Length: 130
Image (tube, rainbow, N blue to C red):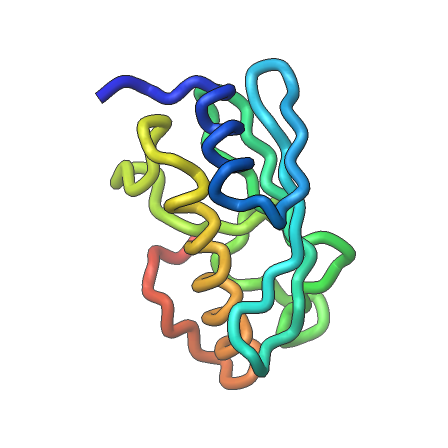
């Protein structure tokens, strides 16, 4: 299967997620929206930044994510604070996959597990520790 071009990703994103604000840039796009993973959840301001040949970078804006303890680490995030949604070496997401069909639903699931972890201290979403 061929890699999707940044324009294909962008056009698919705009068509399938019209409530998101998305802006095309050379070799990629940036998209923003508010996600509320469950009716009882907080609302999170999300930004996806996609550049061709790189995995999408997902950031929760406005310091909305908090560690459970002062100076603690938030589970399943990278050093820059972006979300770790999948294990890259397992090729769970590749440039052949539409971001709208994979990354966006995974963000909501990640936020759901984050809220459980924040309340209980247990990460129920699986994954590999950083």
